[in-house]
Length: 111
Length: 117
Image (cartoon, rainbow over all chains, first blue to last red; front, side):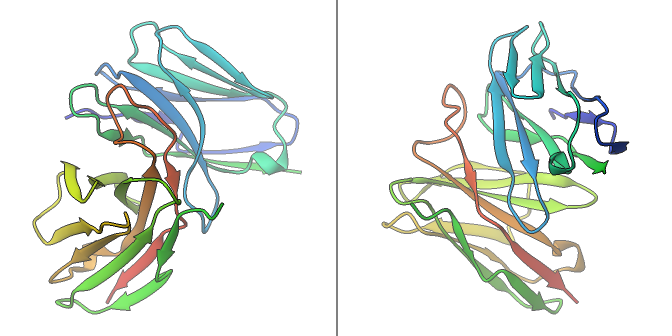
């Protein structure tokens, strides 16, 4: 069974600070996605990374896919209160095509 | 363009009952996937339907079933409800069958919050 472990599970920081969320697995994924979910809503896709070593930037968010396609990280620079939410990584299992989610990281950014 | 809609948004049932949840995908989307989200297990894949056919299934007991209609709307059914079935049930739609080489965006609905007493 392919598993994705996210860390940390909870993060509470002050506005303006930087943070990194990690997503690790012992399995290889054909691609990996990051989602953000707010209370009362479904997850919203932020980015998809496909190539090992790939780095994608979305304004203050930087996403990296590990060279071996087993891990990924999300770095937020100068966090804002609007970044508060649940961040989920999800890997596409190459042989089955199923989307496997990590447990999520709850981020609280305080003013 | 309207997003994915799910009905009802909230549902309270008792153990042993059955429940049917509905999902209307974005217009033109033919793939619908269902997920269960709980604090303990996180988001887990239930099944995916495309053109009225189940393409993929997660590791859930047979009490969980689904179907898709010709207009792409989908329903999922849970029979003989257990306390552990309390969860947020999310549906997501995409244009094409999801997974593998296709990483088209999946658009999630707001979910149905099911509470089993």
